[in-house]
Image (cartoon, rainbow, N blue to C red; front, side):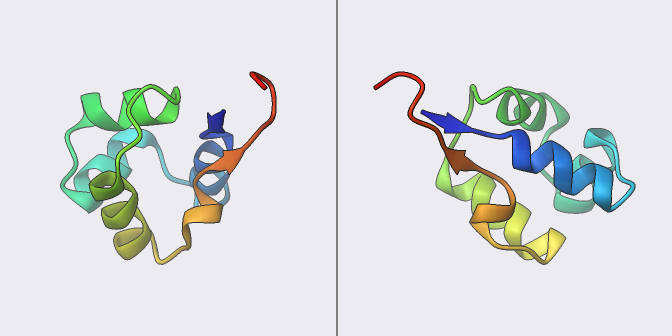
Length: 68
């Protein structure tokens, strides 16, 4: 299962809200809210977040073996 908890940790570390991240990245707030809950994982969102937040994918998501 893909978990987006690292995204929340990164935002906290950067002292940033999801709303601020939406403005900075140009990604609609509703899509980022879904992403932060692990509901909307797609490469375009991941790519844009990495580019604008100057981070790597592993700073935003992680694999967990919960559902295996």
